[in-house]
Amino acid sequence: MMGTHLLVNLYGCPKENLERADTVLTYLNQIVQKAELTKIGENAHQFEPFGATAIILLAESHISIHTWPERGEAAVDIFTCADEARNERAFQHLIELFQPERYDKQKVVR
Image (cartoon, rainbow, N blue to C red; front, side):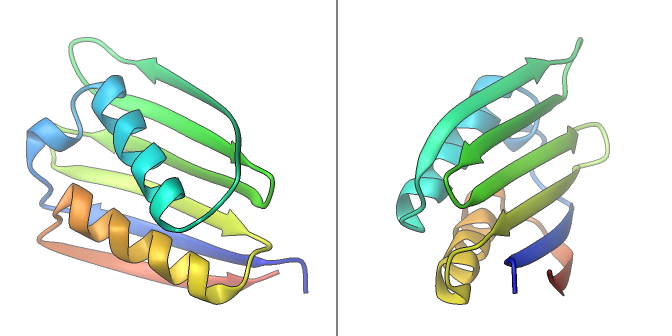
């Protein structure tokens, strides 16, 4: 097994959680820290007038997000070769921070 890849779609998030790249990147960094993953790099892009895409490169692989604040939606990938407990912690912190009304989650074992 190479790792576990969580594909998460968030719906009904507060707009302010998705609008700005700096906010999204702050949240991703908190998720990485709380899940005890190893950050090796990051990048983000701010769309105008709002919306963001961001990625944190991990020694274990990556976590990325693309946001649509006008719809309250985001698409998130959490892919790691870490144990599944850390992936699940990352997912739980994602839900706590972005506060979706609902979400879809797929788990792909690679």
